[in-house]
Amino acid sequence: MKKLLVIFTLLFSTSVMAKEDAVYSSFFGGAIDGYDAVAYFTEGKAVEGSKKITFEYKGAKWRFASEENRELFKANPEKYEPQYGGYCAFAMSADRFVSVDGEAWHIEDGKLYLNYSKSVQKHWLEDKAALILEADDNWKNYWQENQ
Image (cartoon, rainbow, N blue to C red; front, side, top):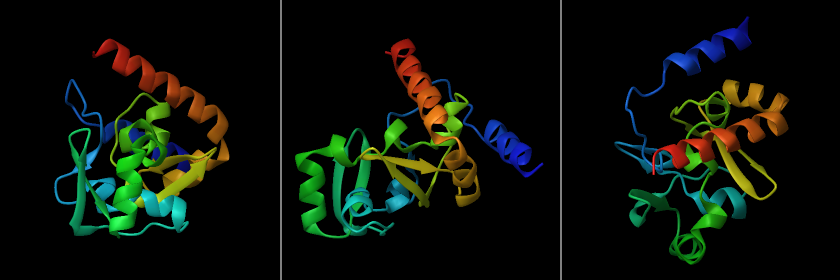
């Protein structure tokens, strides 16, 4: 029953916009709600970025906890940016664009995946291999159709 509730929440909390942004960006926090994308890889945890250490990339403002992390990101953003533009990985597997919680993260095969919440992430982790394949296809198809 909980899984069904999670799925319905994701399906009905999507944006009604016809075209989504390439990077999910919250109004106040920017990309990843202000979390430092590099810190997931270098520190193995979610770290809030500083409002004073930022970088514009793909139309979103990215925050970093240190100048060093910003420079690492600038040198190779593809290495650190989350999959699916930072939208929820579980929702993307259902072809939906949903916001994320920067604390609900996972690195798989060197790629950062974010989810709507830790409870959604728990369900995503149960079948992540299949869900990643579905989400990859949905993300690719969306951008091919909206170019």
